[in-house]
Structure formats: C-alpha cells, structure tokens
Length: 62
Image (cartoon, rainbow, N blue to C red):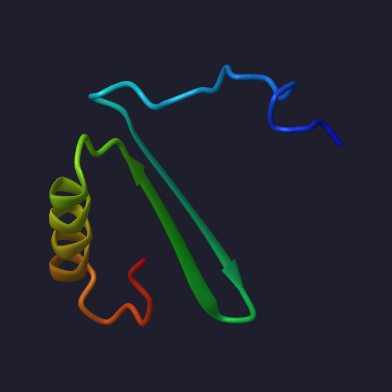
C-alpha cells in the first residue's frame, strides 16, 4: 500500500452539468443511485432534499 506521501494525487470529478443515474432491482427491492456535482455542502444538502421530494417513499437518502 502506498504511503500518503507517495500516493497518486490525480482524481476524477464529474463535470458541472453531469448527472449519472443508475437503477438495479434485487429481490423485489429497487436501488437508485444519482450522482451530481455539488460545489458546496449547502448545494449537496439541497440536491438530497430535491431527491427526497422526487422519491418520497425511498427509505434512505444519503
């Protein structure tokens, strides 16, 4: 395992206008993943609140 000082410093981020949505069904349960870029924690909370309103019967919103 790399030590923190030798680990790669490059990473990938979503474009500001990107949205990735995936859905799978397992054992009659539906799992929906939505990825959007948020420039701040306030914006991230707003995105989660929007998803709560869009999917009010979902049991987990993280």
